[in-house]
Length: 200
Image (cartoon, rainbow, N blue to C red):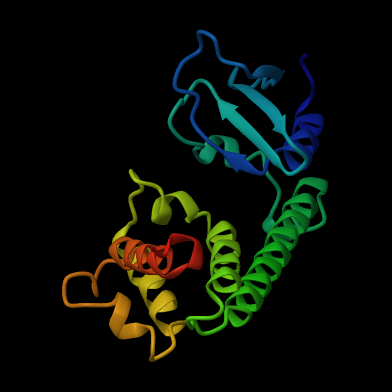
């Protein structure tokens, strides 16, 4: 679709929010929106979700250059464009969700009681909730789970802080004190052996 420069400027203002290179044409899912008669540059856009719009400049492939930027108005004129507003709303939504997730995690951590000989089931349930929130359930508890060093430090700090002083020496020793997965195994093994159903 060929349009005049004024229409092109409006299209750019409304559609362009992120610039990325189009590495190859074959199989490219982007469709041509307009051709600039002045320099025959083709732009491709694809809307993903509500907030993400990609603009492609095929003739340059790797980055938007000064020639395309000349078609754009000043930053002040773009402040109220639909795409700018959409991006702002998207960022606000993401920020709100992060705050909610942080609040939920804080609540989950505060709800974990100190582990004693009498409340393992409750303690385990609350710990499981916390692990699910952080997406670390399998990483900590499954046989083939793997924890990053930062996750390991975080989890062993949380777990050991939720142990009553009467339980601590029974499950923490010099061999496992620096390994969250070993601490977890030690705790589950200890309580498996002390549950009434498992006693001889």
